[in-house]
Image 1 (spheres, helix red, strand yellow):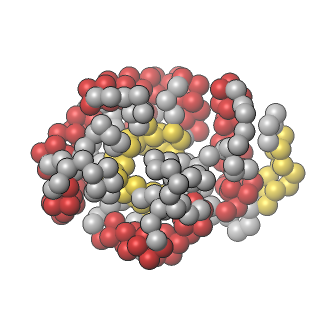
Image 2 (image 1 turned 30 degrees about the vertical axis):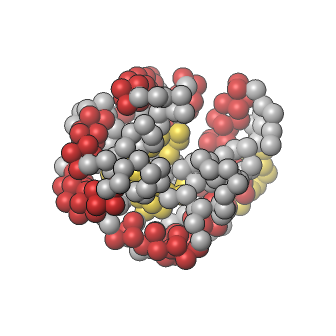
Length: 272
């Protein structure tokens, strides 16, 4: 499997100067990836400032040097594939949402690989849509697909360079979080094999959302990473300390983990 990777998850809900400082701090702390979020409202706090996803993604790239940047996640509810690829309130049934998502991913994949794309799907169509210039990364920037249900997991297995998971708002305990993640990971691996893809070639990414408390202690962090690594997770997406106010010593734990634990784990292949 790939080496372990650690990501800083930073909503763009702070003043811009504070965000710039947070992005640089994430890079300085040794994180591999810096994620923002693309939505019209703050996902976890109502009536809160929230800046545009693609605009702040561009700022993230301009204000950092080494760290990879990306969006986790963007939504087909308010992004059209052509404008989404160029840039970096609906009522659909669950079945239509999944079908639209499949076309969305397929079209974005094409738009990021070729300068001119014509696509005629059931939901999305374009005639000679241009992506000029093409992305620097070839054959295209990596695409991470968030998925939990069987049809979405299959789309991730077919098209994703990475698969992202989190527990869910209804997951009340850490044991439940571990159990649902293990089940999803095993189902995802089986789907990869079914479409003739090696599961180990696709990032297995986990958003460490409550009830997980990664900054509770250094020992907790190490145990959490080890336990999820055993079921195939090789990327951990971590909120900044005090995002949820779960422990008084989170800042100190964060400093020790990023200074000593993360560098050691980043150099060690994850366990099968």
